[in-house]
Amino acid sequence: MERFWIMATVNLEELMHFCRRKGFVYSGSEIYGGLANTWDYGPKGVMLKNNIKQAWREHFVTSRTDMVEIDAGILMNQKVWEASGHTAGFSDCLVDDKKTKHRFRADHLIEDQLGIDVEGKTAAEITKIIKENNLKNPITKKEADWTDARYMNLMFETNRDKINHPATLLTELLAKYKEEKIEISEAELEELKAKIESQDNGRIYLRPETAQGIFVQFKNVLLSERKKLPFGIGQVGKAFRNEITPGNFIFRIVELEQMEIEYFIDKPKTDEEWNKVFEMLLNSQHEFLTQKLGFDPANIRDKEHAAEKLSHYSKRTVDIEFKFPFGWGELTGLAYRTDFDLSQHQKYSGKDMNYLDPQTGEKFIPHVMEPTVGVDRLFLSTLCQFYAEEKLEENGKEDVRTVLKLPYNLAPFKLAILPLMKKDGLAEKAEEILVNLKKQNMSVDYDEAGSIGKRYRRQDENGTPFCVTVDYQTLENGTVTLRNRDDMSQIRVKIEELNEVFLRGKLGRF
Image 1 (cartoon, rainbow, N blue to C red):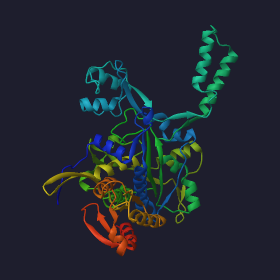
Image 2 (cartoon, rainbow, N blue to C red; image 1 turned 90 degrees about the vertical axis):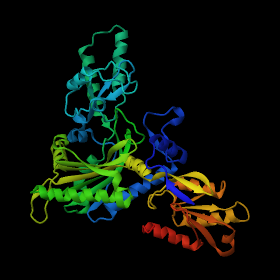
Image 3 (cartoon, rainbow, N blue to C red; image 1 turned 180 degrees about the horizontal axis):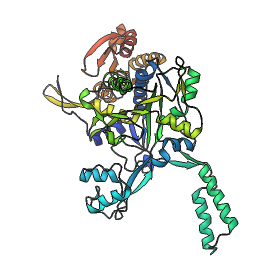
Image 4 (spheres, rainbow, N blue to C red; image 1 turned 60 degrees about the vertical axis):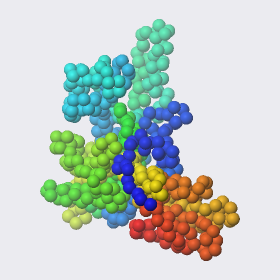
């Protein structure tokens, strides 16, 4: 049998259909027409996602002596976001086409059509650029009637005070208007002010990032775990961003999951000191992608942020980009945030965020490095990296095999048990093997529907590294056929040797 690759990169639309068909990712609220850019992970998607998170934990947290992990809540005191700067500055500039009601991020609109970076410009300056250049609607490809640009905060907001919600207050005012009660007495005005103040005090945000939960709990972790600098606090959790123009499947979504570390260090005396830690963490990120996940180094690259484009809290930021089907896109980030975050929380909360050096007795606010990666983007890049279509030629006939060549540690199922036939006790023997492996907490699939060739192909698409075929010889001597997903080779092994297959996989010896 001859084989050769016919697809180097996967088409994003084809990948979306593949994910839905195979139970990796479904459209959110699909039976009700969906909800723009929300996605649900199916059974195999959950397994792959959990394996990615476990690989991250093993590499960055559990294998190191200088890391711990927390799980902070999604809802936090609104003052947290005032201190971090999100309340005032976490926003995107948007414009609407009055003709079509389409909404776009203004910076993307300008960059795509003019190649101009408008970061730092005011809404008025952006409006002028759009209108003077008669930018077209990228959906209709026609001239648009643009609104003025305005900034919108990306945080989702809710409120604990539903009685005094703005919509309720507005309804009350409209009722007065309909009754021709235009004037509002002094007492009614004071009552309205009190309701508005109550509503403001009850405002809650869905967190737009997981980092602030780590900063808020820094002193508690420091004291309870008796940690000394340098050390890191990791966290895996959900974040929410009201993105203006989400898209590219799960690349940019409104509900995302992050894996972040805040690595706390001494206050550096020289640039060389903090750069040494920065490069260590950057190399660790590369090792995670290429060694732990098996990514091709040709598909990743570093993007250093220019000094004039750095966030106000950052002294250096480097993104690691992945070559997605739609082009290069940010996958991971590493930022040196100096002592900004802890200083801000000390200022706004009035609580001491200093670290006491046990050797020198010096008190200071630690500086921090932040390596971060989005689980959903890592999930997408993993599929893009390992999805392939392979052309087979056998006995003069051509066929195409779709295969997900996931590394053993990422594969949802490690083995698939396949009885050659449903009769003659083969299915019963296969189920016995399945139950025994499941009791040992092994991730195993079972399939008895269709020809053995079709079942092999289904497991190739699932990314299952090995298939175990239970046949008539199994009943005679207790051996099974073990098929390798990648080269489709087959060998006979004893049933009890299947445990060794799992062990070797865990040790990374495949």
